Image 1 (cartoon, helix red, strand yellow):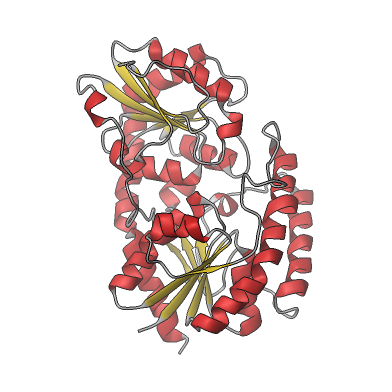
Image 2 (cartoon, rainbow, N blue to C red):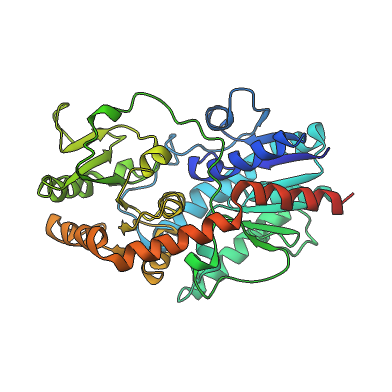
Length: 393
């Protein structure tokens, strides 16, 4: 039996992929614990019995870490690093170290944006694996931005001097011991790096609570189903876009029924509307089993979950890694890209008609679905972690 400490940022899209892996390890008799700045989030996603070591650190949406919704491109990336990721690493480091000393893990599993996990493990001499919950950095995310790449490298060097081993050389976003990528080259494309320690395991979808209260009885089996979602971190930026989606989908109500996730309550839609169902949250995985298309922000989790089900997409990236992931979708032939900030209902409707009717997009989505399911998901990731623990003894 081995012990695994998962170090994750307080972000749903980064915790969710690790949940299935942790559940597999627990089912095989291993000990699992978590370190996170939001223990309640981990327990909500991983189960009330999860052993979670709390850490200090900013939580998205809290005072001081609310990103202006109109930030895009390099400015948005700089804000993310300067005001969130780097402060999060500094704040989490003492708690991660205390968790490692109390739990005594054989392996630390560090999310690629929870730098404290990698650097504390490095300082303590513990083997660590990277949980790569987005593949953007493996497919040219910083191509054309050499100054940004240099700036990021300097910030990570300074961070290592504060909380890691100053003599270390590994990039805390990419473990030299084991890199688990929750995607496959069929989506990432030809730039996907290959090395013995890199394993493409596809999406990890197991062990997630489905929630309750969704009006399944209102779904019309005679119409195509379209899910519209901007994820859990973009409620502040989505009002205009969701309104355009509602118009476009309403115009196709004779053949399409829409489900729009609206956590911010931005849309005023009658509760008994049979054509456009607007709800604060959706049971995404069970709903995707019935969906014919997805309109989204190109968040890595949402894209991979849709393609796991063979569902083509209309992608409207907002910021961060989303433009890169959107490019992956388009290059793979599994969807159509539109401009988040400027697209209108007519263009959205045309893009939606394309993915619903063009067999090329559906065939590409099915090809990626096959690759994802063959990759092994949470079960494969758990097996790789077991091997790393055994090799490190």
